[in-house]
Amino acid sequence: MVPNLQSGMENVYVDTSAICYIDGKRGELYYRGYSIDELSRMSTYEEVAYLLWYGRLPRRSELREFRKSLSLERELQEEVYSIMELLPKSVNPMGALRTIVSYLGNLDGEPSVTVEDVYRKGVSVTAKIPTIVASLWNIKNGREPIRPRKDLSHAANFLYMLHGEKPSKDEERAMDVALILYAEHEINASAFAVMTVGSTLSDYYSALVAGIGALKGPLHGGAVEEALRQFMEIGSPERVEEWFWRKLERGERIMGAGHRVYKTYDPRALIFKEYARALGEPELYAVAEKLEELVESHLAKKGVHINVDYWAGIVFHALGIPPELYTTIFAMGRVAGWTAHLAEYLSHNRLIRPRLKYVGEIGRRYVPIEERG
Ligand code: ACO
Image (tube, rainbow, N blue to C red; front, top):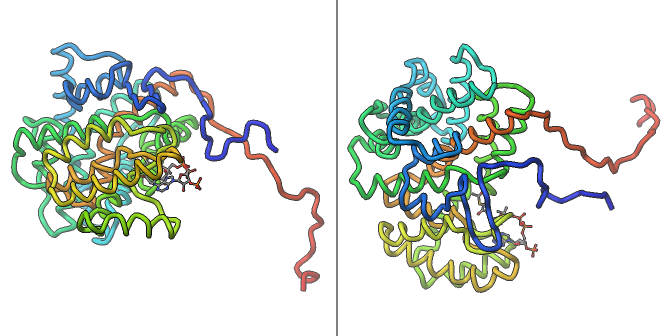
């Protein structure tokens, strides 16, 4: 038995942090000490990004300046649109986002990774990700990209660029809340990837590309798209029970359920559920509610409960967002958290370099190829 070895690094603390607190038993989440319930009811994505980065809520004038600096950074350089045109039409949007964020790094004359740089670059990349995602989608579908507007909020501007028309107040609010819920979540796989690359003193963009790559996987951010697809595949509430047991018999997983830290209902999922109930297609909502009942009554004993990705897809579907883009929306929100963690870690940086306990052989004799038969 190897001392201190935790499979999947479960419950391993790698550092201290003042950004995010999760109580996985009670189902509580706090950004900089403020509960997610309060933030999702009262705040905006821009204010939450400011809070995550600078550790306190902005004053009115500070928020105005912060919004302005984001709005001034939304437009992409012309050559970025040309690169997007060159990508294969079949490309996965997360793969495409990873490529374009990497390309932005090549356009930045100062690709260093100091604490001061991180916030400046954070504003630029946070502002640009919605433009990249909406433009990728328009280009993929043979349409001209819609250029960002300076007068709209971060959330409204994304929906505007995707659909070509200004969203309603309710749609804007639902999108804003989704970005708040996805903005931060302690040291998950993607934040750890960002911090690991940052710790080598590589550069901001390389760190972010690592985060996007980690988030893309179906066990992390990829689950949001898969969760909606499973409700669509089931089709009607009467089919849920048979589908659920067949899935478990095959040893497959319910997407949008289970979490390494939460051993109860994810508090973000509760908030998404309210929006799904209010805005979602009733049939999809009914399927999801029936499946939720089965997950909560049969999988809770294993510590498996509904997670953030379960209801989010129903909300995005109601906002007219195609499933292929769901994980990119997660990235659009999470860039705030990644940036906060990178800056916090760099302020006392030490190279992240864990160990693997070697269990192979030692001292084997090299046999020349002629003698190996
Ligand atoms: N459906 C069915 N059973 C599950 C599920 C699920 N979604 N998740 C876990 N289990 C079961 C496992 O089969 C295992 O059972 P066993 O002990 O009988 O073998 C037990 O619960 C523990 O599972 P682990 O894989 O050890 O749990 P872990 O903490 O490693 O996994 C994870 C967490 C990866 C999120 C997992 O729950 C999962 O695959 N969920 C589905 C994908 C998903 O929704 N991902 C999004 C996570 S949230 C986020 O990243 C934003």
